[in-house]
Amino acid sequence: MEFLQPTTWDEALAAKAEHPEAVPIQGGTDVMVELNFDVRRPEHLLDLGRVAGLDRWEQNGDRLRIGAGVTYARIIGELGDRLPGLAQAARTVGSPQIRNRGTVGGNLGAASPAGDGHPPLLAADAVVEVESRRGIRMIAATDFYQGVKRSALEPDELIRAFWLAPATGPQYFSKIGTRNAMVIAVCSFAVALHPGERRVGTGIGSAAPTPIRAVAAEDFLARELDWDAPLDEAVAREFGALVGAAATPIDDVRGTAAYRRHALAVMARRTLTWAWRDHRGPGDAENPGRGAA
Amino acid sequence: MRVSFTVNGSRETVDGVWEGESLLYVLRERMGLPGSKNACEQGECGSCTVYLDGTPVCACLVAAGQAEGRRVRTVEGLAEGDRLAPIQQAFVDAGAVQCGFCTPGLLVQAHDLLEHRPDPSDAEIREALAGNLCRCTGYEKILDAVRLAAARKAGT
Figure 1 (cartoon, each protein chain N blue to C red):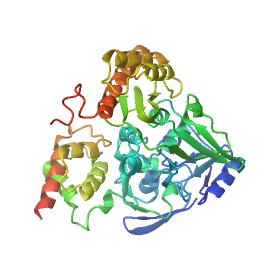
Figure 2 (figure 1 turned 135 degrees about the vertical axis):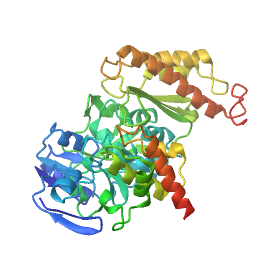
Figure 3 (figure 1 turned 45 degrees about the vertical axis):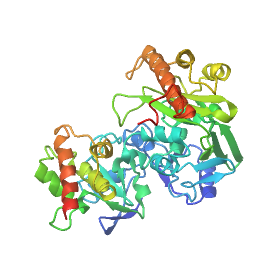
Figure 4 (figure 1 turned 30 degrees about the horizontal axis):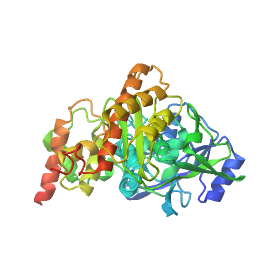
């Protein structure tokens, strides 16, 4: 095995072009497990931890461009106000030690259907910036996930950043697991309100071969939601049912397909209800509790 | 390959490191620092927690080469000579150690918590230690130890 340690992005792209089979490593929280357990023995390990700039984020026009090396801990601490959905998901990742090393870039690279970062990226229309010596590609998150642990990334490409607009409305993330830390999601759900467009974005995790949007549920809300009124409970319930129906889960050690569908329906209804409460604010007669205490 | 980094204040260099090797393996098997424990090798248990450039991480999930030139502080580096760090003394006094396997990781993680939150709430202690598994104590004595260390710190 060879340990490649570029310090510039150009060096990293050159290394990946020369060794397309090289396994990129950033925080190591996924890759090292595979090495420790002899699951993978790549000929080249490409450490991106020293590549200048990968650990930075910036506001670029009306969107945030977040380097692939920004850790979950920093997303929580530095971007929690602008990206509440992603920050909530980040808080559920592993443990403090894992969040100090793990990155959304690594989540994207692994492309596990259970990755906690994916649902909020889908719900908020994230775009993944990937690059090779052949050029840059901007890939919508919806097109990025292609199969179980497979993404649109070509062998000579590296993930440089992801782009996400700061939240313009309430965002929530919910996840089912057996305890409050160190848990792979049984299933997870993210919702993002886009009040300017009168649109609701969704993301489902761990209940299909890839992270997916619940498109029919989004379309339903686009038709049925009255943005100036309290949330109709029947609409919230139907939204939940459509989210459950959008999933194509399997039975496995973490849960059954039927449980996942049911849990998704509940999480979708709940997160929409929470988001709507924030959207309507304390003046809403339907939400006398909020702000009253 | 050769890897060189600062560990507990002293610059160390080791040769013959396998490229896929973890920082934990280098510390334990090549540098003679067996304090950090090797249990799950997948970040689940926290017993290998060390500071890397001042941030607690699972040493089993850091590739040795990623530590090149960096500062590592292990449980062996918490005490000052023969004087235990306050969190170590509190673990002894509160009876927070049974088999002891999880203790080094818990000490480093709790040490970091008290650096940032000198007076943590119970919820903050639980959250900070959520990635450190103990199979003996039931955690109550560990929580007592962290509270004790915080109280002593506030009293000095």
